[in-house]
Length: 254
Image (cartoon, rainbow, N blue to C red):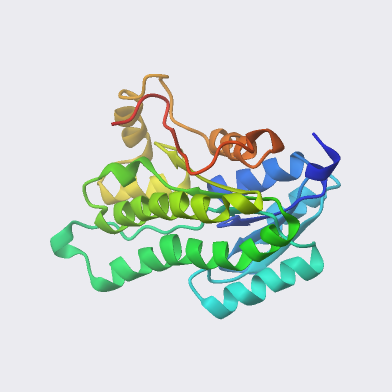
């Protein structure tokens, strides 16, 4: 790892649990200072405490990524307390699954606000620090659901939208030394997939058995699998990769 990388400041949204927490821990292990951002600051503290116990720097930040003023304040605080952020991982997400005829406008808006509006606001607010530094990395978490998934019209649309946002920001920001990519996980064993199992009327073990039978590598994904992928995409070595969507699903996707 280069000396430059060791002094990077990263922001991981939705960092209190699951993929976000694993990513925050991994980037800290890579030598970065990490702002762990989630809706409630107290929820981030266990992850921050774990990171700090290794001697790395971390900061717990509470903010609604869909709230413009909250995002502005959060990024300003991170810049003041950790340093200007030049790595952003847009991971914050929620589920409001339902079939189209049952889906409310509230279900639709809530998912769009967190996944898509939140990624836009966070990217817009942090990019100024990246442009000033002449170096930056933005990675947004999409999903194989972007290809379509029953009962997830809102989630699928938001994740597909993130892919379009990724490609456009890659074009706009590339001249400033900023790369922008998306990671699209398949089945990953988290609280969110447990909620999906409940929606389907299955236990988590039942869902895992059904899904794993379709995965060529023969297992479900782990948050650490996604964190490792993000780690590569935000590295110095990945500087010629931009505007890409990398499916991390244990096999080919449609």
